[in-house]
Length: 272
Image 1: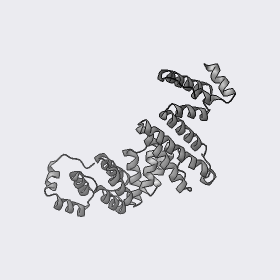
Image 2: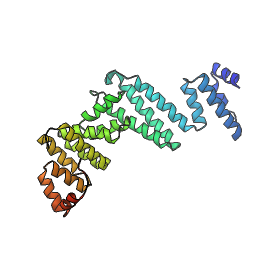
Image 3: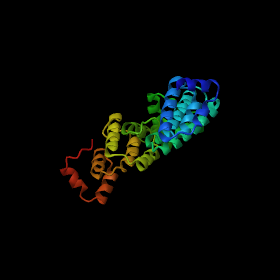
Image 4: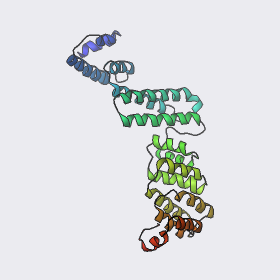
């Protein structure tokens, strides 16, 4: 059958093969034969591949093709000013949107999430042409997450580059909230992400490791105090407050949670 496909392509009549009425079994055979043929002999013929995918309702393959095209276009914008690739970035967003729609029809949840995350990243790049957000190395992504002052922007970056984990957020929150005093960044993270107890432990440990003396920098300590109040482990917060001499917080916790001081004295619960 391959020579028939060759001839149809040669004479620009490929679509004729899709017009023939076939039973269900024959349609499946044709679908597999066309897909195999195009992938082997014409892998870059996106138009004919898409024609076959649409005809046979191969929505996942449509999504994969659009995703690959979007990533290829995005890579082509590397090291070029946003103004010079504005239309390419818009095209990337459209392809990612179309890919997500195709994936939805096949219930490909992970692929839909990936398309949405990258679409948000490219849209953010268009809104912030002065900052490079796409085509970043792993090291550049980590640095960017700590320097973006808006939490929503940092979250878009984290989700697109799959850095939405405890370690990356501890670094970002420490730099933005504790060092820079942008406590709203940490507050938004606590509200949106509901970080685990480990997040607060790691944040306090990072504070201790980067500050001199038992209480460290007074301004940094004040910022840390506001952040750890979002931790649900009252006993841990009480221990940290005592260790760091946050006496106003100690008093408030003692009043709000009677007996927490006695429990702290008898418990092996660590504030480290």
